[in-house]
Length: 261
Length: 234
Image 1: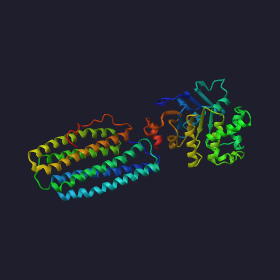
Image 2: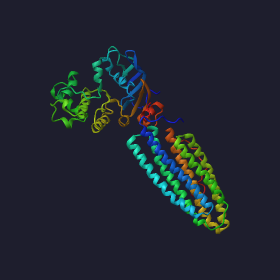
Image 3: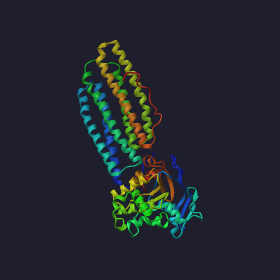
Image 4: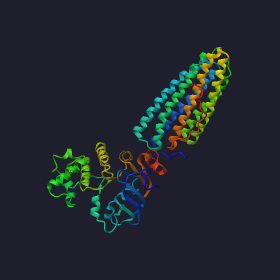
């Protein structure tokens, strides 16, 4: 098992070592070590219950919010231990943003959805600067042209695909370094899905991106690195092209070719 | 190599099974075409030769069937890893086997031109050469059906024998032509026949490389090739 993808040449953003995650007595993730690249999109794949989402959520301590959840091992962001006592969790979640399966805009205006983060983090002084951040974020999320004339309408009035891009804009607005996406397109139709995938492609390089997906073709399309999880273990991690054309592990092959159990 | 587990979607396995069946049928027809063309040649049987020419149409039709089946498999099943490599290999193998069928047909077409004229020595070597090439075709399609890389390597190793036959027949025919110009027409035809068989061996070797890649994901490195058949003019 290699921790680093074989041909990783770019810088490492997140380093996880021997990470285990427990829900009470149940071990959901078992001693996983992985390096997440700054410049590549990393996809986590695996059957339901394999622990991939749990592992993803340990990157910005979302598991802290779950009673009985416990994380062992070390996870560092730019070399700094994110589970150390002096880590500001609110700050961490601004640096490591998250987009969920179901779009979850606040029941507020489109503008407020995006402006909320920068405002509470003090990233903009004054209305003009805030407007600038909102426009920039919506542009990067590929939503600006569709909503620029109705920024005061409710975010929940948008279509599912637009809502998801609004959530991505909201994540981008606080200028994060990493964006975690947990099944960001699984509730969307194919066109909206394609737009999210195109957006991921455009955001690549600016942010380190980790995406959990059940859609094998989607992982193949959007990522450069793929990690396959099974029963809490990291089975194989490597170049996406290699994983999908010539996986080294039998379990990976059986999963991606649809021969699973 | 253990047989891969069944797909969760059973229809996927059925599609793959059908694809393999078409390829196996194509290979069987090509192999049979070669054997019958050589038998017709040996017995100067123009009628049997004509049947080989006619039967080749069937191979051409099967090639189209393979193409349709692979396009459908990719569109409907989105195969990955070894399944994807096998689908691509099937597409390429079908076009190579079709070509092998053409060579057998070409041999058969020469039979009427050879009806007159006595036996010359190389004629007795051609059936044995053809038998080895036919075996290579048979073996390589077995290897494909079983996803067996070892068998594929074995096919490549046999190509040397075919090349050796070709070089030997080439020299003998050249000698006949020089010694007795009356044999030139017949010898020239036989030279083409030998060349066709030599090409069939090469194509079987190419298929073996595709089978190896489909089965293992690796390229067959340092292919154990026979001696260079390139010394005589191609």
